[in-house]
Image (cartoon, rainbow, N blue to C red; front, side):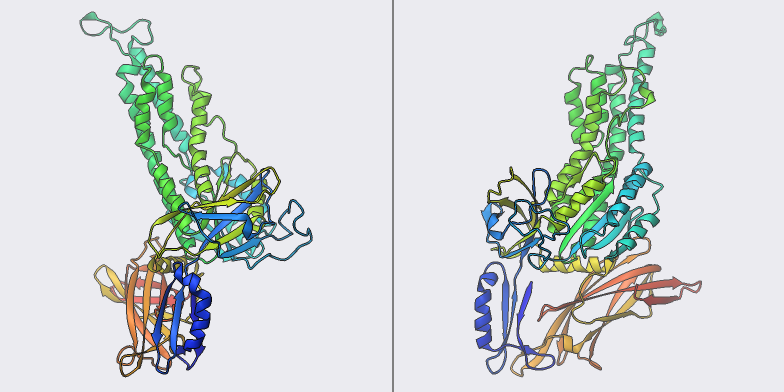
Length: 616
C-alpha cells in the first residue's frame, strides 16, 4: 500500500507543505517504521513531496465450529497472530458476515444483520479443471454439481475464472461476475484425449509383476510339480522372489517413473494457475477439480511386490521403501503450497474420483494369491488424498474427499468464504527479504462451542517490488485485471525480420499529466522516471521473455509531444498470434498502469510480415 501525501500545485507536479507532512507523517510513523520505506524530495520554498510505502501482509482466516458451521461474530481482540513465532500487532481487520449466507451461532450478533461488518476486499475464484488427469465419468458427475452450485449465485459479487490445462493453460472464461457465463464455459469445455488412465497403468504394472512371477514358477522350483529338464538332465529351478525380484522391481520402477513425471507436470500446471492469480488484488481462491496425484508415485505397486514375496523375502518392505523414496514428490507439494501462500491463494482440492474403493482390483487378479490386499488399496488412496489434504491445509483451504456428489461440500465452501471469513493484516518489522516466513493464527476467546477450527495460510513470501510488478504483468497477460492508474495507450507497429524471429515494436503513450515530475539540480529542472516492463504469450503457449527498461523524463531527456510521453520498446516474436502485456510504473509517485493487446504476425511467401493488432 503506497500512501502519497500531497496537495496539487500544478498540473504535473504534486507537492506538500512541510507542516502537512509533519501532521500526516506523525499518523503514519508507526507504519513506516515497521517495514515501510519513505522518501522525500525537497522543493523550492520549503515544500516537498513525501512518499511512504507501507507493506501490509494480509492473512485470510476461516473460523468454524467442530461441525463446520462458520463463526462470524469474532472481533480483532479474539485473534492472536504470530510471524516466525513472534506475536505481531494486527493493524488491519475485516470480517465477512452476510446474513444471507452465514449462520451466526451463539447470539452475539443480530440475526437480521445484512450489512458487511467492515469493508471487504474483492474475491476472485478460479475453477481449474485438470483435463489431463480426470476420468470422463468423474468429470461429468462433478461438473453437474458445479453447475448446480453456480446457479445459486454464491459469493455475492465475486469474480469467477474458469481454466483448464491440456497442452498448456487455457482461460475458458472470466474474470466474470455472471454465473451463467461461468456455467456456459464449463459446459463448452472439451475433455482432453489424455484424460487419466492412471489406474489402468497401475493394474498393468501389477499384472506384469504377476506374469513374471508365474513365468518363473512355470520353469519349476517355486511352484512345485514337474519341472522341465535342463542341461545335463537336471531340473531347472526358479524362485520368483529371488531370481525375478529385480525384474519385478523394474516393472514397478517404470510405472513409478511415468507417474512421477505426471505429478511434476500436474503440480507445475497448478503453479501456473497460481501465477495467473498472483497479480490480482484482494482475496483469491482456487478450486482444483481432478483425480489428483500420488505423493509417492508407485508406492502401492512396490508394496504389492513386497506383500507377494513376504514369506520368501521378509526384508522386502525395507528394500522397496528405499525405492519409493526415489519417487517422492513431497517437496513439490511443499513448494506449491508455499507458492500459493506467497500469492495469497487459498486452494480447495476437490477429488473428482469421489468415494475411492477397490482402485487396484480387477479381473486380472482372480487368484487370492495375486489379489492386492485391502491395505494395499488403502495405501494407494491415502497416497493421493494426503497430497490433497496437505495443499488445502497449508493454504487455508479445504480438501473435498470421498464425495460422489460434492454439492454439499461446495456449499460449505461458500460458508467459508462468505460467512466465517476474516482478514488480519500486519506490517512486518523488517524490510523485504525475499524469504518465506511462517504464520500462525489462534482464536484466544473461549467461544463456548466445544472448540473451533481455524484455517489460514501457513506462510508468506516477503516479495520485493520487482516480484510484485511481475505478478501484476502476468495476471494482465492472461486476465487483464490490473488497474490502470496512468491511462496508458499501446499499439503494435510494423515488424522487421530478425532471423527466425520478428522484431515487433510496441508503442506506449503515457499522458504527461499522469506522471509526477520533481525539481532536480541547481536549475530546478523538472525530471522523473518511468519503469516499463513487458511480456507475451503465443497461441501455442510459448511465453516470451519478460523485458524491463527505465526511461528518464523531463528537460534534456524524454519530453512529451501533444500531451503524451511516447516510448517504443522492441519485442522479438515468432510468427503467429501473441498476447502482449505492458506495465508502466512512475518511479516518483509509485502509480502504475497496465495494458494488454494482441498482435498477429502473418508471414507471406516473400518473407514479409503484416501485423493485425487490436485489444483482445
